Length: 417
Figure 1 (tube, one colour):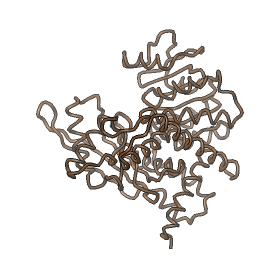
Figure 2 (cartoon, one colour):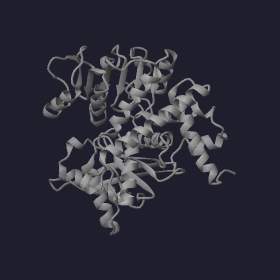
Figure 3 (spheres, rainbow, N blue to C red):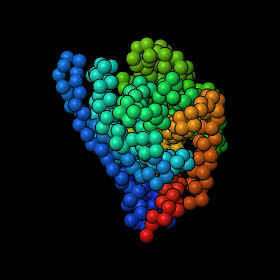
Figure 4 (tube, rainbow, N blue to C red):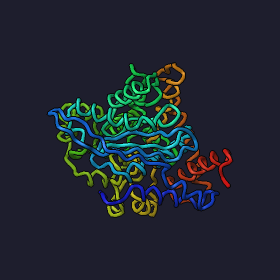
């Protein structure tokens, strides 16, 4: 795994790769490689013992040409300014690829939430919400959950914002609990779009998904849901991992049972009837499909030479470095990029926002049907762009689609000189 690759530089390189195919001036492309603004703030909060602690937090807003900024908030010790800039950029292009009318946003606090009590996490979250108050809003910037955050944190942010603004604004944030204005299908949405992308990719490649072997790196919400839904499609999940290690069984296992084991024990390791693997061993297993669902930079140029999967579908944001992309492209390994494959989360967040604005709730069936339509249409557009342009990867084709839509929006507003 590469820990040194700068995710923001990876984003800029990905945009450059697509720029040659997009009809836009060099100055326009440079604008589309940088966020419009970044909040960097220090949050001071009270620990349970009465002492004060200060932590660093960020919010990046990357291109609002197509609508309000949209993107998650993560709690992780590795959060940096460059990371949130990169993630906000990926969000901008992700929204454009699936044609959701949002720009890109991303935020984070540089903490390990395991080090804090629930009360301390609430005080940290509310302190961050107070700092975010001038930037966020139903028509300005709409945060959502990300790594190590969920409905609980989103509810705290919503409550803090509404209290400070003396209003009711459920659409200020998505990923909320159902009782607080959340949407059916939101928790499973990212994993569902990954599974749909796997299905569409196998169909495009003319391969049978029934019995195909799949390895999933990362077994949080996205990875575990994707594994279960891929299993439902007939594939055989033969290996999964989390931060504690990896397990494998060449005959496959029940992903939902593995999730239950992780819930009981805190890890996928030790699941009965499986062999232990390292993270790198899982990433280089000879499987039909690899699903990286952890953090960015999981596969670098060196590790990519040992990747044996025929297809990679990115559930995480930025799991492959540009060097890894080059190696895999040279070996004709297709990669369904993150900005399509994991776009289910932001797509259903958009549905949640629409429901909040209309004060009307959709059924889970409607949410899932609409999500499937969005993802399959976006996949068809991606493949058409890949096959009709001189680009070497599906990722570059996705950026061609995304950049083109953002440029069109800005151009139609009459902003170009």
